[in-house]
Amino acid sequence: VGQEAPGMGSPRGADCFDIQATDDEQGQPVYKVVHRVTDADNALRAGDPFPGTSANSTVTDTDRYAAAKELYLGDRCQVPDSPVPWQFWMVMLKNGNLDTTAAICPDNGRPARPFPQTSRFPCPGGTGCMNQPLVFHNRTALDDAGRWLRGGLFGTYELDATDLGRSDVSYYSVVWEKQIGPAGGAGWVFHHKLRTSAKYPWLMLYLRSDATRGFSGGYHYDTRGMTKIVPESPDFKVRLTLEVKQGGGPNSQFYLMDMGSCWKNDGAPCDGDTATDVTRYSEMIINPETPAWCQPGRRDQCPPWHTFRNGTRVHRDDTARFPYAAYHVYCSPGNARHAEQPTTYCDPYSNPQPQEILQIVPHPVWGEFGYPTAKGQGWIGDPRAWELDVGALSHALYFYQDPGTPPARRRWSSLDVGTEIYVSKKAEAEWTLSGFDILVPNKCVTSQGGTVSSCW
Image: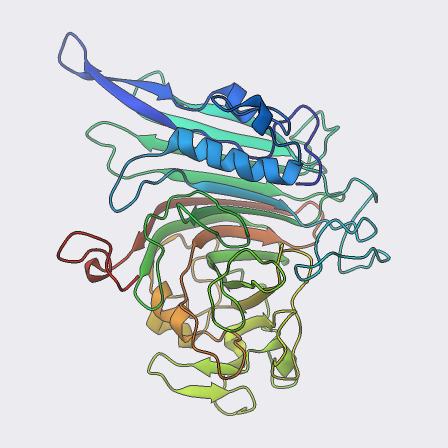
């Protein structure tokens, strides 16, 4: 968090509510929205006591307060369900600026030292480039006809902005809507917009389904979310419908599916030790302008191994059989002691702990998993409903482990869709996401006694 934005609450907020239904004089249903989270809840800042808690338990550290606020909001929003309660979808907005002279972000999970600014890490304007955004919230409400629920949030990183419509001002918005009543079975639709600016050229916006308990992708503290059963490779699929209206330019890494997990290099589950935990990410980028940096002459940009759906493994040195064009880039965790050389190590600053990233692009080898096989599939002018075998794919993908250690359980606590626009001035992206469902086989949900099965 660093510093909270002026006039804004700690950067965690929620919009959750109950729907009360009654009948009018003609016997037609009438609906009412009853909010569980107040504007005062969302405005809570570091140092404010959470309602219902002792003033002596106040948290003043901005980082710790944001984590505690997420748990507080989760309690306000929690819905009883089987096998466990759930809380909310997560809208994630991130600023890629890094002030290297401030040494705020850890270096592979350890305290960082300041160093001169480089072109790899933008910080236009210097001190203050890592600020939190302005956030404006339209609470979910019924339309005049009482049949559509709509809500949203929007804002900018330019703290002095007076006109959010200007093309040289960063901007983001997410609007959610759902029809209720007999015709309301289609679920929520999420409309997203993201625009970068000269001062904020590297921005990210995702809709995430995070685990309802424990660490979610990229976080080393307890979080809340929508995923009641954390899916595990290879036994799950993801359905979603995506329409990309604006792509965000050539540097927009638009993720049809981004999966996030965490395990140590010896295969053990993460425990919150940022020096030894490793965030594992893999993303399918569908922007047709995204190249395959993995090439026979740049094997440091490739994973050491590719595994086909039938289990056949091919090493990256096998230039006749390795599908180089299927990979945008691979980078090793910064704390990988036995990473196969040559390799590129991941950015050490953009996660609280070391990270490993494997980014793939449309290619025929991914077709067996339901993923796009050619550039342009699912892009602008080609809206699609997808059923992605994320479980089987995530089981086949390469992730680093120390030699001789037992394979990690690949449990994906975060699944999301959205874009990361990298260092682009005035780039704009717009997309609509709906029908986002994670499918887990029944055999992996319950046992005969109705309890969670041991396969988890």
